[in-house]
Image (cartoon, rainbow, N blue to C red; front, side, top):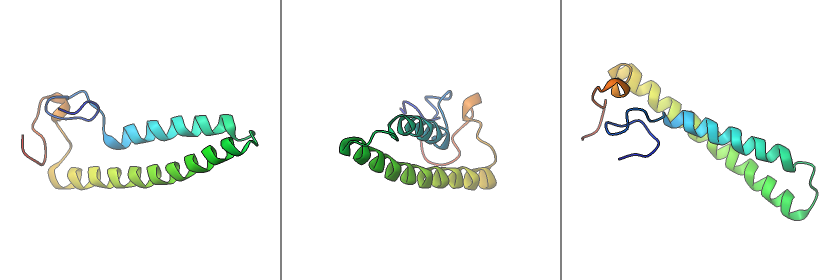
Length: 90
């Protein structure tokens, strides 16, 4: 069973790209609070967060592309309303 993502067992879950966007927004919010901190530790954390944001942006792109592929090939997901998964096995 998935804890966060939409699945047969969790029809009220979220799309991966939506979770990643929320996470990215949280990181951006944290970054905005430390941009003026000139201590080496804060600057290192900010630099790391910027790298994480780059990876998250790429992950969002990939997840969005996967959703587009599934929508184009199998139509919109009906898992949230009790329908079957579009690919994979139960």
